Length: 110
Length: 114
Image 1: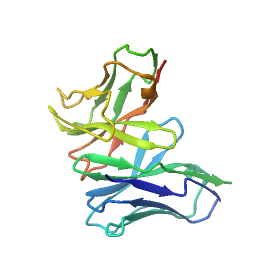
Image 2: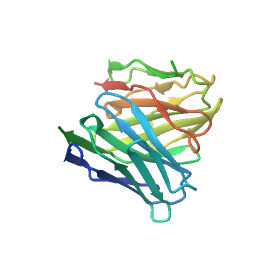
Image 3: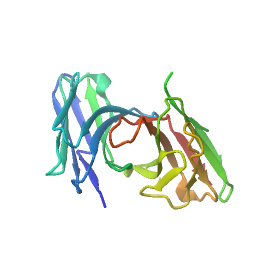
Image 4: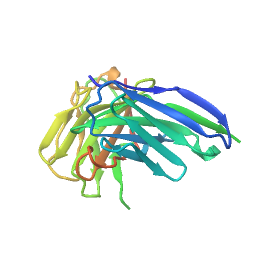
């Protein structure tokens, strides 16, 4: 059974710092990995999707990497801003089956 | 506006009283799915549907039913709700299959079962 783990569970950084969020999964037979953002009381918004054949994806200040063989993904946020404060979740999929991590709650202090 | 719409957004009910949470998307997406979110457990998939009339169990299907009679709608049915089904529920959709596509989420439905 696929297990997805995110470390750390919470992270607090000053504005302007670069930071890395980690995601690991136990079964490397995935089709893709997505990173999501969730604001309090809201649904999830997809940030980046990496197909299993890809190694990384970039969108603005965000860069996500995928090492399928080792079961790891990282989300790199450059020059963090208070507006980046949210919970970040990763999820892996295979044939419609989706497994999520519990998320990392990020606080960026002004 | 492209969106996934869930109703109701908030509901308090009592044990055993059947309820349905509706989900509708206006993006002509083939894939739809339901999740529940509980503190410390992240999101867990309940059921998913790759297309009309095709549904499959996710990680935690017990106590739930779904149907996909039309492409745009994917209702979640709790035949006999119990307090352990108190949770925040999310519906999501993807263009073709989640294996290749970005997942779009609704705003969530907070359900309390007394």
